[in-house]
Length: 308
Image (cartoon, rainbow, N blue to C red; front, side):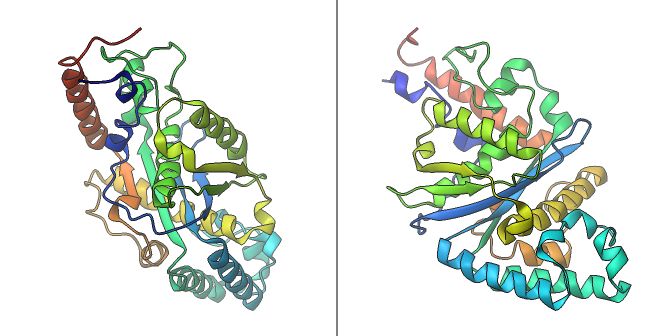
């Protein structure tokens, strides 16, 4: 017998968009720092990325991050990853000798890789692929409360015009799945980024949704200034690297995994807990999710009538 609680939300369906692969919940309490790239209108892909780890591990990381910046005479408040890729500009262009650029990038990568308990996660989505689906399917992808007939229970459910909600939700769920039962994960987004408003809105939407058992591990979002927060600067560094890599993959037409990350990006994602923690949702990936969803609906229709 299929109970209504089993189908009221996408708690089970979410595992199709964001596959669970037996992640061990070895972290008692986590702090996660996340940033975005490509949520602006016209962007071909959007990416959410960052790092998570225990509070004590972040203290060690922050100390080492500041040490690297001092060594290269980079003021903490002036660090912006966009000024580093693909070549130095802004502060770096005016205050550096060009020979400092590559050594600085390599030192940042080594610092991130050295902290093995600060773990990366990234998820991107191809915007055109997302937009190719019907409104109903996009509602499902973005968390709508679905009925047995595959139709959202509310016309306003989901975020069908916001593809970044899919990788955003995936990143939150991943961190929560690594968090021990009975504890919470705390999330930090940059107050000085436009994404802060989106993040707060989406965070509230998830916490108010039905089902999604992992949401019980969500703490409250915080919005510190990136210019004062090494964790957010590291997330900014990772999301910029990841965006350029994913854009290269999409433009090449090659399947995901065919083009290897650059050595610098490889260093930054070296400590990922699972291969699923570094992925992009292409049309093929979303098609697979949709097929599983349709099979799920077919199985539900073999059970009891859907309550209204």
